[in-house]
Image (cartoon, rainbow, N blue to C red; front, top):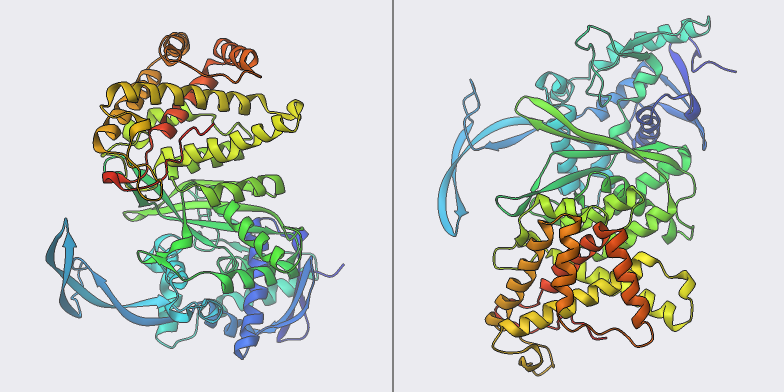
Length: 573
């Protein structure tokens, strides 16, 4: 077998990479990024450049000289000068000029000083060529911001971009080429050449750790680590700010694919970059936001799967083994690793995620579903923990609820669209042996909670639900008094359940929720009553989870300030 690095003559070397020989997902993604960049240089007519001798599913052969390596790195680390605006003066640096802008704060317009400096940025020529918006595309800006915030957060790691912005050549070529030549000479004699690995090209690495242990790798493999950011999609995780009741950005998340089919993946990721929607939300791409870190891997798999389907293939075939994700955020002068993980390819999981992403807008409800999907648990598992972490108004509709998509709206949709119709159809067709017991319990509890909420709301409100006015489209109008009554009933029950242990919850459920008239279907009356009773005794935590989810669902009423809308949580059965 040939060696990974071999000498063609005194000035040319051959690099032969096999995916199976590469140690990490970052190395495999780096090989894909290297192939992608060389092909992109060919499309743009950039010379000198390395030559792709062969690329197949499992390996690539590349031939290059020093000029080809220089052309590669000059393009990868190309930079340009631009103006940057700051809200305060930079330390020990005078601004180029000072501008005043008008900014709206709390409904009032205020003037704010902005300090303008000359600054350099990574050009990202490959992305400019592939993205729909070119140099103005928000995905390019996101990539540039990510580099400066996490991978190249330390100013000394940006020097190559600065040299290129000043029309100088990247110095990494002069550093790396002699090592590659030496590796070619020594590999023929069975002596590999190693070199240190910096954290700017390998997530989680340090040139030297606290114990002064050097992080090293083979020279020819280290080369690949410069290129994986070209094939690693970027996402922006958002957390829910309890105090301000809004979503806040929390750093950046890199989804690094572990490539199994090199040739196919390079084409797929090229199409991925070309297909990205430049639509923005604020100043960032609308499609970059996620609510759970693990969602990034699922979203990337979903997008690649959709590409395959459009081409007539059936889902993901085998171009990926897994996707690794790294969630990082710059805090002060340091970059904090919030978390990392690895997701294996699973078509069943991907199909379920496609349903979650299309029908859920509340970040907390979506997070609950995704985490349970990844942990292979029931969709409602852990709801009690979630309910205990946030104030009640995050789940029960009220004037003080967050302004993003209501939790109760998504919970109601799940009961109505994912639970009730499926069981009804199974019962109608006689497929009762296929009915999931937890799903049937969820339907029964949703009805029980609904009957309780509607009965108690009618008691508290001067106008009964059946007497509520309707508009010309027969859509119900909900006056303020009725909304307040519904909020009071659902919130009181929600808080009462949240603060009770299993035994106390059973007493509350039987003594309060079951204290109003309940209507069981004649056909299944005895069976449904027995199911609920048995669940209360054996699995009260499941009944509690489902009951609080149902309370949230029934708390939601459409159309604030008596706007007309159809009530999606209305029990039409």
